[in-house]
Amino acid sequence: MAEPDVPPTPDMPDEAPAGPYVYDYKAAPNRQIVMPKTVPLPSLRTYLAEQKAAAAADEAKWLKMQADFETAKAKAEAEGKDAPKPPVRPVPRKDDNDMKTPWPQEAKDADLLLLQERLGDKVEEIFEQAGELTCQVTKDSILEVLQLCRQDAALNYEMLADQTATHYPAATGFAFSVVYHLTSISRRKRLRLRILVPEGFLPESACAVYPGANWMEREIYDMLGIRFANHPDMTRILCPEDWEGYPLRKDYPTVGWGQRDISFREDRGGRLDLIALQKAGQLGINLKQPKAD
Amino acid sequence: MGINQLSTLEHILITTKVEKVMNWSRATSVWPVTFGLACCAIEMMAAGASRFDFDRFGSGIFRATPRQADLMIIAGTVTYKMAPVIKTLYDQMPEPKWVIAMGSCATAGGPFDSYHTIQGVDKIIPVDVFIPGCPPRPESLIYGFMKLQDKIMTSSLADRYKDIFEEVG
Image (tube, rainbow over all chains, first blue to last red; front, side, top):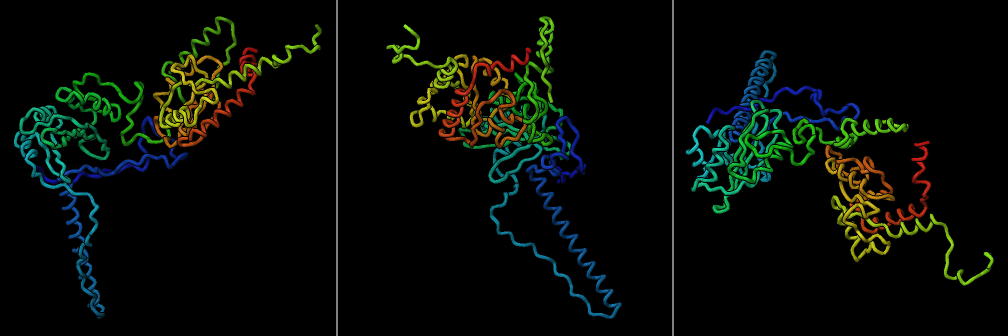
């Protein structure tokens, strides 16, 4: 395990990001895209770092209270007044809310330990959260890990139940996380594999190991723009073929795009209108062209 | 035999205008396309089934092809990917043809003010009757259909070609 590192929060500009799908925000301010400023990636390392940072901030606050008390005491002595009350360290409020999110814990499950033993350096992190097993591996070794999970007799994860991805625009070092949810029907267990990929990286396709990954990877490409290497048919699956942009990215506007003008696919660029005008000109008909406004 | 003279033919003949007869026959035999897009289609099917019985208005024969249909009920959300298909289906229907936009999605986009939904089907094809509701009950659809029948009864053959005449000059 590497040293805990807190993901830094970059400074976001006040203005919306410039891009091909930006609105007139002054006309509709409620439609402004709010970009996330933190990386809510569930991870034991991040959780420990957050705990450590919170404890350090608490300690610094206590030290500042003490220093303030000392200066106030010295000032009161110099002026001949009564000494102020010494500060009391605040006790953390007891949180009885049992509905809070379970935090990540050290991996104790045999599957995770076996994966770490077999893969060694290729495992970046293993942890358990709410009884769910998560194994984060390096982005180059995902196909090998999937093969191991599928074929190893001790693991024997037969099914790729789901494969999806998330966009983390505020993260440094990676832009997306691709998550593989494996299910072992015979052993009645579930495992989550995760890779972190930067923009433009092509992860290896899981179709060779799990053929069911075909459409799921096409959906990831359609919605987030992650292309997979060695995929049999890397085309869009939900949006039309000539769609621009990737709708599940955080910088994509969620509202308002349906109100744009409709131009049908066979007539993009007014090709049919042009032909109709030419034909009308040959026949000597004055065909009025409809005005857009 | 003079024309003002009463005859036995008076009892079996009705004198009327050709236009009125055509409108009456069209309004009482409107055949819709079997075409549903979302949950409004369930209500449309309920309207066609025996409890509400669309057939009483001569409109229960849902045709499986647009080439045999007069009416297109846009029952559901119109996505950007589906829009060319709807346009093609509408173009394949023979004249005269009518369109009912059923429910708030087909009327104005509904709750989906989003990148993938067309804000009202009237952006791509002309609509005769809009029916609000999410989804509208079969009674609403039947009422909207009766409004369409009224519209068909008041239509004229000259109206349909008026725009074209003006266009040509």
